[in-house]
Image (cartoon, rainbow, N blue to C red; front, side):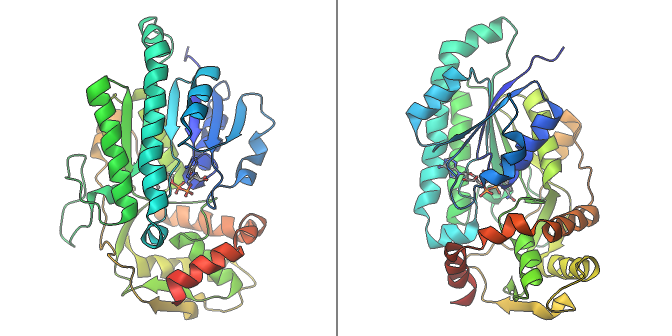
Length: 362
Ligand code: NAD
């Protein structure tokens, strides 16, 4: 007797958004899913091709900063749940050009919140009273808002003070504060999730794991920043989607939930593991063993040393646990990049090469 939901998924053509949309359509086929995505360099409509025929699915190309469009979609589609993934998401690009990050992540989130506030005032209060639709604004954010940890510091909790260090994390922190304020001030049913590093299928080639897989497949160096000792906490993307599922259905408005895999790994160890998997799974590598391609490069400016996230609240209050171990998840992911050359090869465009040279070669 679950009432079907009507979702607006922003950034649904990106990495996590597209995995979420596939997950949601599979698990809740009676729900309406409307994707709003500007198809920036990181958005890829081909990722959603298998869903385009479904009557309950709609793709809209558009910018989250376009208030009139957001108003129209919320009303026409009678949206009750916004799952907000759209963002500029890559730290290295935020160092090269922070403007787009402030625009999309801060102004874009503000625009959606304003549109949702108006929509909610007009439609939601009465619906909530009738006990029909449950309105939610889920803001998908990152653990990077908490800053960097020393080797012995305890993992981030929901009460760790914000201390963002990159233009990316600062813009996400700004958007988190706006979301929080819209609950506190206007009573909007918002929820924030702060998640650790995700990996899995459909991730754009610039991010660490696909970068290493793809470079190994085309025989390019595997660039590792600094001394390779930076630590990240890795979560398989489907486990993130499962976490967002329980948060949408059972999370409490106004709350924040940390999401993490409890898998702290040093970058260099991660790259070595990927090399072993590539050696094992790929019959035709240009360079073997793959680890011969590992090259240490100049560190990223302001590179955070360590992130670790404590997900106890999500586990104890909402009953979520990750289902995929990092060994299984990495194996699945490497296998996916090996068998989906047709997905990633077209993404290695001139623009991508130019970006790559700026970050790793100059
Ligand atoms: P991504 O870069 O792969 O995808 C972002 C999507 O947003 C793209 O499809 C892009 O076209 C779209 N987009 C960008 N600007 C837009 C705009 N102005 N209007 C409409 N659409 C726009 O990012 P991702 O890795 O899937 O991350 C999704 C969300 O999850 C982000 O908010 C990110 O901060 C957060 N997050 C990511 C990670 C991670 O490890 N990737 C971890 C924690 C949180």
